[in-house]
Structure formats: structure tokens, C-alpha cells
Length: 142
Image (tube, rainbow, N blue to C red):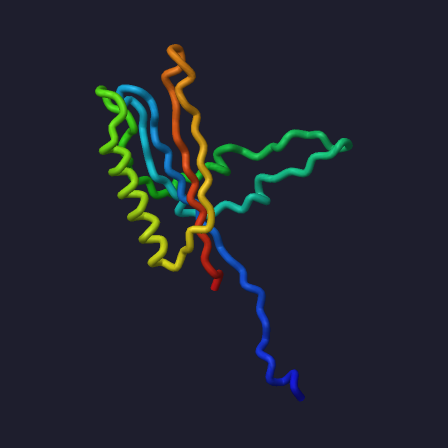
């Protein structure tokens, strides 16, 4: 009789969305910086193979099948210009990224994780570099 009054317990499931910022640290402002996110989904299982000692064949997935052509791209400013590091550009990027995060929050997304990495200038012979940040959002799946 008591069990009839206990509400049904359902496991919560979440969906996730990844937003990536790529900010150029190429001197002289020659790089490209963007905030990007996919507008279409991919099922990782379609591009996954199982490898073992007995089955050591390579993954035959086609790059063109994996590639996403429908995505959102927001222009960001490069960290450097001809005069060197440009702090106004960094602050402008912060404002744009904050705007995106706030918009995601109004759509019910919660910022769950932030992961970043950098490939920076390795000296005179290496003028390339990027600073990449992945913002991972989650919300309850309906």
C-alpha cells in the first residue's frame, strides 16, 4: 500500500553541445580566429572500428562522411597585430564568447566543462600557433 504513493524515479539523461574557440597567436595578425559549433550531428559509431590482436585492420571511414559542412562560425580577433600583442582584441573575444555562453544559458544549456590547450611559437623558426578552448555544455534531454 505504501509503494503506491512513491513517485516513479527516472534516471536523468543529458545531451551535450561542444563550442570551440580557436584564437590565433600568429605574429603580425596573419592568423584566423573563430568561435565554431556544429549545426548537425554525427554518430561516432558510424566511424568506429574494433581492433584487436586478431583483427588489426585500419579504420576505413571516409573523411568526407565525417566532415560537417553545416556549422556556425563567429569571427574572433587575433591575439596579435603588426604592433604585437593586442589586449583590446583579447577583451573583445572575451565579450563575444561571454555573449555565446549567455545565449546558450538562456536556451537551457549549462556550462559543464572547459578544456583548453595551446600550440605556441617555438622560437624564431616557428611562427605558427593557436590557442583552442572547448566549452562543453549540457542540458536535460526531453
